[in-house]
Image 1: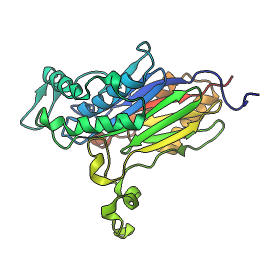
Image 2: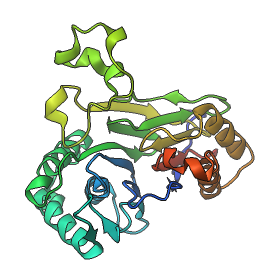
Image 3: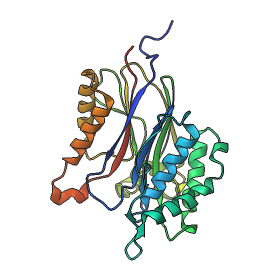
Image 4: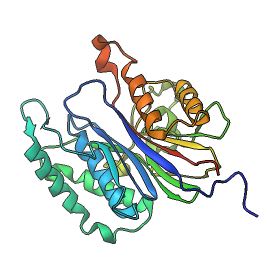
Length: 297
């Protein structure tokens, strides 16, 4: 007999983008296809983070999305910036297209990559680490969360400071499925910091991402979860400006009221945009996110 708590219906999904600070480039992106959701944050790189985010999202969609039909992208994964680069070396959209194609060619034939999330993360790590050979782009690091979906089973892989949050049916608070790769949270996994007094480790120093996996020893994290009917999964490229308790309240109300996922995504985008006054817009975080909902039978 089938488990009544598990929906046999396919998961519904949508993408969203919080980019309210008006920066020159949007350095986060997300993608969705049949059987795959992915979010990425191109951290560092001085207005070249869009390149790392696009490389990660596009490669994962090419490998894991089971059909071209219905593939969706937002943010850096969806287009090229018209103005990017660092002070004294501003670049055009045409240059962005050229550099991206040169870097993406380092993957070789993407269709030959193994259908294993961690293995593809390792390939992306290699390609991002090689980006400086194509142009004067240094310091690029990419945080990424990707999940494959088979029925109600979600298998995920994570590096960086993204968030994977699960709201079980009827619950009022999220379960966190990942640990952000900040030094104070993963120092016990780093050989060079294991002997340091934890109270002496500063907060919110990013220590791991694609393009730098070999330097810290933190590695690639995995998670595996079965979604029951009415469960909602939220993937974020990094923590939103909205407090997570508030996001949970918004999501709980939307699911209970039968609000379409696209409308929920727009609500989160609007709320994120309202978190800071215009004079403090520079404090806002650009965040790409993906939402999946296991519908009730």
